[in-house]
Image 1 (spheres, rainbow over the protein chains, first blue to last red):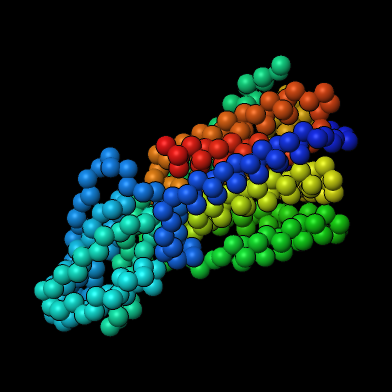
Image 2: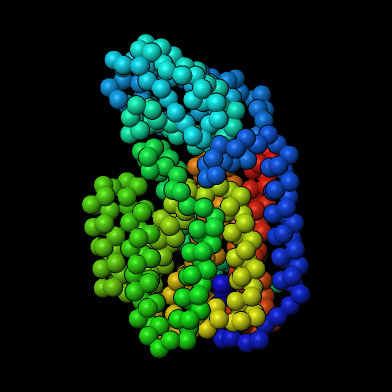
Length: 142
Length: 260
């Protein structure tokens, strides 16, 4: 609120007009984000998703698991990019993500094994090793 | 039409500081935070309950006698927590608390209006950056719309916002930017919510793209300019709801970003 140290009676239909315009743009945002592909990641990490514009070629990134650590722990990628999860640890792992349906359906990744996943929606996706939930990582899809 | 650009420059300066630092805070959390700390489990319902409680507290504090003490304590807490969040972006946890405490001490000792505005701007940046990081843009847009209506009702209908602003001035604990217009006794206040709420939207975008967040922020600044023009060109100087134009332009900015 902007206030001046002199106060007097206000009022106006002007503000109703402003609120109507505001409402119009809120509805527009809802309309335009609903019209595009929209995949739910989870309640808080979902953003409106945009279909691939074709401006940029998809890339493949590798996340390596070794000594209980996913490296890089936080990976920023773009929509349509693929991430290869490579198990360089001594034991097999199973990657779980509650925010990505189908992500954990691959099963166990044996030692030296690789699991690839292409991200088709924007959001922040957390994953962890089923054997130790403290071994976590994040993929941020822009 | 009166432009009063010298006043707008003052408003804009602190607005830019808050938004630029807020974007940095949000982007920095994403870049450096450990995954387990990413994304608070903090739904829109939780936030609305929190805001409702806060609104009830604010509403009642305009009627109780101890409100001055309440406002001072609340302001100190807000500045401490907000600036600590900013300092934590580039300092260790311990040093960030030390820096936030030092800022409060300087604020208390120097009693400078510039320093106070700067502390408020940084506090808004810290709080806005963190909240924005944990929300989605749609949540932020809904909040902007709800609070714009609330702002109009609170200023023109119930007028408790005006009463609260007066109480804050009397208590010397103002949750907003104090812009001196002519003499020290002639000033205007830009409420912290008018900067914080658009910053939340900007920060939700900063999580994915800093340039796009800057575009939304630029639109919010255009909204600030419209608010400034409306305020400066009133026939009689009176309190005005500042958020609706800023919120509208911020949402337009977001619309531009998703359509481009």
